Length: 102
Image (cartoon, rainbow, N blue to C red; front, top):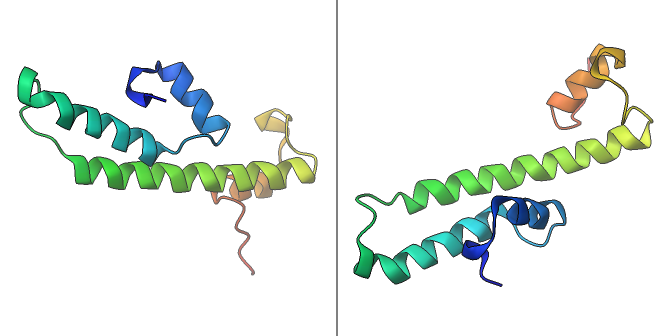
Protein backbone atom coordinates (compact mmCIF):
# COMPACT_ATOMS: atom_id res chain seq x y z
CA UNK A 1 0.00 0.00 0.00
CA UNK A 2 1.55 3.32 -1.10
CA UNK A 3 0.45 5.65 1.68
CA UNK A 4 1.86 8.70 -0.09
CA UNK A 5 -0.60 8.16 -2.97
CA UNK A 6 -3.67 8.20 -0.73
CA UNK A 7 -5.99 11.14 -0.13
CA UNK A 8 -6.25 12.70 3.30
CA UNK A 9 -9.66 11.06 3.68
CA UNK A 10 -8.21 7.62 2.94
CA UNK A 11 -5.38 8.20 5.41
CA UNK A 12 -7.90 9.32 8.02
CA UNK A 13 -9.86 6.10 7.49
CA UNK A 14 -6.68 4.07 8.03
CA UNK A 15 -6.04 5.91 11.29
CA UNK A 16 -9.61 5.40 12.48
CA UNK A 17 -9.52 1.68 11.61
CA UNK A 18 -6.11 1.33 13.30
CA UNK A 19 -4.63 0.08 10.02
CA UNK A 20 -1.85 2.69 10.12
CA UNK A 21 -0.37 5.09 12.63
CA UNK A 22 0.51 8.72 12.14
CA UNK A 23 4.17 7.77 12.49
CA UNK A 24 3.88 5.11 9.76
CA UNK A 25 2.22 7.61 7.43
CA UNK A 26 4.88 10.23 8.14
CA UNK A 27 7.65 7.70 7.53
CA UNK A 28 6.07 6.71 4.21
CA UNK A 29 6.01 10.32 3.03
CA UNK A 30 9.63 10.89 4.03
CA UNK A 31 10.70 7.67 2.25
CA UNK A 32 9.01 8.97 -0.88
CA UNK A 33 10.61 12.40 -0.53
CA UNK A 34 14.07 10.86 -0.08
CA UNK A 35 13.45 8.63 -3.10
CA UNK A 36 12.62 11.40 -5.54
CA UNK A 37 13.98 14.68 -4.22
CA UNK A 38 17.39 14.13 -5.84
CA UNK A 39 15.61 14.47 -9.17
CA UNK A 40 13.05 17.20 -8.50
CA UNK A 41 14.73 19.22 -5.72
CA UNK A 42 11.39 20.37 -4.29
CA UNK A 43 12.46 20.84 -0.69
CA UNK A 44 14.92 23.28 0.82
CA UNK A 45 14.72 21.92 4.36
CA UNK A 46 13.37 18.65 5.70
CA UNK A 47 12.60 18.30 9.40
CA UNK A 48 12.08 14.56 9.53
CA UNK A 49 13.02 14.11 13.19
CA UNK A 50 10.61 16.85 14.30
CA UNK A 51 7.87 15.45 12.07
CA UNK A 52 8.33 11.97 13.53
CA UNK A 53 8.23 13.32 17.10
CA UNK A 54 5.02 15.16 16.27
CA UNK A 55 3.54 12.03 14.67
CA UNK A 56 4.35 10.05 17.82
CA UNK A 57 2.60 12.70 19.93
CA UNK A 58 -0.44 12.48 17.64
CA UNK A 59 -0.47 8.68 17.97
CA UNK A 60 -0.37 8.96 21.77
CA UNK A 61 -3.19 11.51 21.69
CA UNK A 62 -5.29 9.25 19.43
CA UNK A 63 -4.64 6.33 21.77
CA UNK A 64 -5.73 8.35 24.82
CA UNK A 65 -8.82 9.60 22.99
CA UNK A 66 -9.80 6.05 22.06
CA UNK A 67 -9.45 4.89 25.67
CA UNK A 68 -11.40 7.91 26.88
CA UNK A 69 -14.14 7.40 24.28
CA UNK A 70 -14.43 3.75 25.28
CA UNK A 71 -14.71 4.71 28.94
CA UNK A 72 -17.31 7.43 28.25
CA UNK A 73 -19.30 5.03 26.11
CA UNK A 74 -19.26 2.41 28.85
CA UNK A 75 -20.85 4.82 31.34
CA UNK A 76 -23.41 6.10 28.85
CA UNK A 77 -22.28 9.69 28.16
CA UNK A 78 -21.26 9.07 24.54
CA UNK A 79 -23.62 10.86 22.17
CA UNK A 80 -24.86 13.41 24.68
CA UNK A 81 -24.52 17.05 23.62
CA UNK A 82 -21.63 18.80 25.32
CA UNK A 83 -23.91 21.08 27.36
CA UNK A 84 -25.64 18.03 28.89
CA UNK A 85 -22.46 16.45 30.18
CA UNK A 86 -21.26 17.10 33.69
CA UNK A 87 -18.18 19.15 34.42
CA UNK A 88 -16.52 16.00 35.79
CA UNK A 89 -17.19 14.13 32.54
CA UNK A 90 -15.68 16.97 30.52
CA UNK A 91 -12.59 17.06 32.76
CA UNK A 92 -12.21 13.30 32.31
CA UNK A 93 -12.54 13.72 28.55
CA UNK A 94 -9.89 16.44 28.48
CA UNK A 95 -7.51 14.41 30.63
CA UNK A 96 -7.86 11.23 28.59
CA UNK A 97 -9.90 9.54 31.31
CA UNK A 98 -7.51 10.21 34.18
CA UNK A 99 -9.38 10.96 37.39
CA UNK A 100 -7.39 12.69 40.12
CA UNK A 101 -7.90 11.44 43.66
CA UNK A 102 -8.86 14.30 45.95
